[in-house]
Image (cartoon, rainbow, N blue to C red):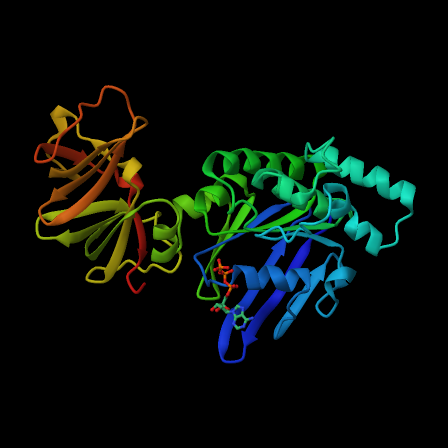
Length: 363
Ligand SMILES: Nc1ncnc2c1ncn2[C@@H]1O[C@H](COP(=O)(O)OP(=O)(O)OP(=O)(O)O)[C@@H](O)[C@H]1O
């Protein structure tokens, strides 16, 4: 197991900024994910780790070894590409064996290693099949076996599930996680799918516009987003702009609209958020944190009367958009026994103080 260090790495493509000043230390055996929308710089960062791009600035280290200027075949990193990049006219066995042949591994050892890799990805008995005779999911597993057969120190995966349908994607997600844990291999995973990132990763790096926004464990990224971008990109969030009206001991009250104010705990503020009376701030509240008010608590702080404008029953939950004055509030209830409201009906909501999160007003 080996650690990977990106030491203030940047990549410039002519005038275009690919990524700027990425500084991360990925731990041995860690499952680390680069997450962000299209064009945010995640593939560029991965390609620099693989050796397909060289950084314009900064260093890349695998353990103590500086690999910044090494070509891909000298880095001992296995890579799975989004489109798998398999050789369609060759068999499964030949595809998996390719990296070993290049490395001139003796025949007997080669056969043993290819068979072991086939077993790891549950493709025993598929050795003589041609790639174009396989399903998308099976091709994905060949690509994974081909990366693993060289016994890499690091596994790099670039959106490996994006060509699979929803059900297969979920199965393969579990499969990759199982393999990674079994082999204990340091893994770097690129995706734009936040659910995938949340469920698989030890830590996530969220990127936008070539710049790292936040690095943290999934719970941290979800519950303590550092800015508006992270709060809206990961899961759903109500984001309201307001003005700090009062600061009272451990609590701050923010006015969002005439007659609509919310109180939250000051400790629930992003590091860059300065709370001062009269200052502007963005509040983030997750829909699932909002409750229906009890009949006896129809009035009081953080309790608001809304009128349902959208009501969706999904089987698992009931999702609402309710208008509180002119402010739309998204709420999600998963508990049994909730009486479904239709459009136009009244719904009294309670936003617990603990679930109000303060983000900097400037973002
Ligand atoms: N070879 C290149 N030449 C010029 N610009 C590039 C090149 N590769 C990437 N870029 C630019 O660098 C930025 C980051 O691109 P990158 O491919 O890393 O994004 P991404 O987050 O992986 O997006 P996607 O999910 O669409 O692959 C983009 O603005 C992109 O246009």
